[in-house]
Every structure is written in C-alpha cells, then in structure tokens.
Image (cartoon, rainbow, N blue to C red; front, side, top):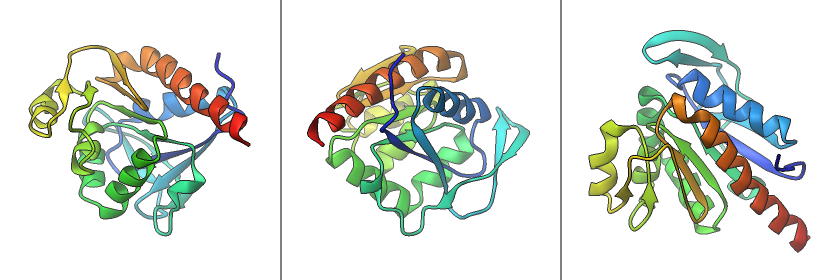
Length: 187
C-alpha cells in the first residue's frame, strides 16, 4: 500500500454527494496515512445519497471560502449527479481545480465529478472516464472519453461509478503516492 503520511488532500463536497464515492476513498486515503479534509460550499454537514435515496449527513471540516489550494497536495472530487452539478456551478470550486491542475498536482474524480473538470475548462486533450451519461459532455469539452473502470492520465485518475471504487482507490493511492514521494524529495 502507498504511504501517504505527508500528503494533505482536499475532498470537495456538497449536498447530493454519492456516499460511497466519498466515504470509501476517504477511508482508503486515511488508512494510507493521508490527512484528508472535507471542504464544503459552506460549513454545514452535507446530505449524502445512495443513488437517489438519502443516506448519512456528513460533517465537513471547513468551508471553501478562503481556501488556498496551495495548502493541499491532492484533490478528491467524489461523484453524485446533484453534488457535481452544484460544485461545477461554483466559481470557487472551478477556480480551485484550475489552480491545482496548473501546478500538476494529482486529482481523483469519480462518476459525475468530471463535470467539475469540464466546467473548470481543463478537460481538453485529456483521456478520462466518467459515469456514462456524461460522456457527450466530456467529448464536447475536447476530452477523450473511454468506457473503462479507471483511467490514469498524467496527474488525473478518473472512474465511472461506485462499482469501480476498489480499482479507483488503488489507482488513486498509487498516483497520490507518486506525488507524496516527489514532494518529500523536494523538501
């Protein structure tokens, strides 16, 4: 397993997040030693869903207001259609994604979360996967969409749906681990 003890990860979430696409990657990251903060659009707990049914309410660690993406080594963008649609419409989120990606820092996005990458304007020329219903959006944004459980392209790892979480977590830990090693070498 990757050792992520020096890695700080921001998980960007709001109401409508697909519960397993947040909780399972966060658990895997924390078990690998990463410091994960849940960043919400405000400081209120988010209402998670299991597809369309209400699931748990999940507290966030802080609001995105005043967020400095330079304080984080990696971004986790969990899915859920409602979550991703709300996040992509928020300039604070898309701005953070653009800044983070411009520095080549790793981003993990699953299910509908590539909508956020599209709205941030960073998909052109990238090979990614997502939930199948947004493949046209990926293509229209200039991305190369593929129907694979998980795709790693440079500093990104993307995945399709909750069934793919095991391979998504594995590839995310590998990608974030490479970043952690590179960061340690430069200190």
